[in-house]
Image (cartoon, rainbow, N blue to C red; front, side):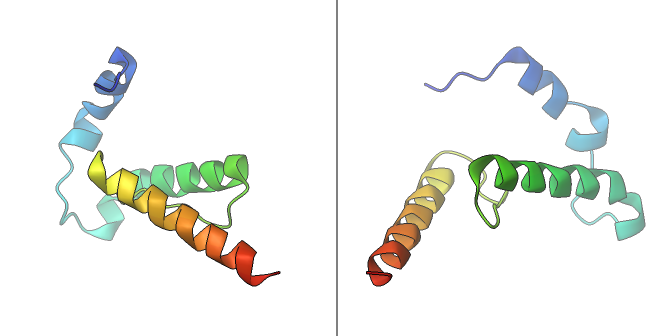
Length: 81
């Protein structure tokens, strides 16, 4: 069982995030898009990766994405030798 702090639930439940329709026009989505872009940039800087993704929803999606990234990284490192 994963631990989800109450603050995460509170932030995710904000009406601007939870109530945003996926088909909103771009001019009404700029705040959310900026937040996501900046989070990607911060995560890339922290991890030292060239890029990151926020796409995996959770659970198995995230685990598979992580395994594929590790596999690609190891494959690239082995090819360098």
